[in-house]
Length: 257
Image (cartoon, rainbow, N blue to C red; front, side, top):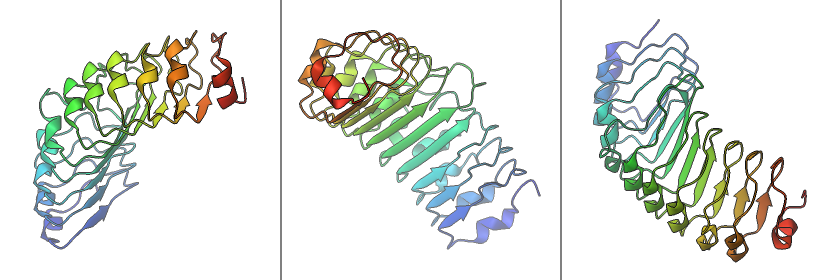
């Protein structure tokens, strides 16, 4: 059966809908927008799913949305950005090349605290919109995109962000605005193969306790300000092939150097 029956919309008391692994599912019926009590929608591994309902934004109670490994899903409907109660959005291994086609609609996700986004290798024109800075409740941001080459300066406006995880092979550098993230405790840049340097003022991240730079093959030096990270407790520098000099203090935080 390629889709759910329209009668699913009659389950008005439904709070959780998990359809993970339904590989023949191509789309959801529009009637799903009537599920006003739905809090969790899990569509992970629905590999044939090509679109979400245009009125998904009508799911006023939705707090968790998972579209992990929905490889045919190339975009999100405009109404998605009006899910004011959405707290967790996991969009792994999809064809969604940008979080939004409009520079102004991410602000509608006012409750979003945890965003995971990753495209498959065939996704084109991958980018993060400037409106990412409007996600003022965001505490965790995880992006895995092999073709993402840059981040907007507005990422520095995420004042609640505590964990930033970027596994982006083509990302050459971080915007200097990253140093404004004063709540940041974890910065994970593992597998950023093209990363050549960290921001000169990285030492301003006074809450940072964990820094991961595993397999940053192009990283050749660390900024002097890294010694100003007073809260730093652990550093991962494995397979940073071009990194020649590491300050003694940082060596002590990384036993493998």
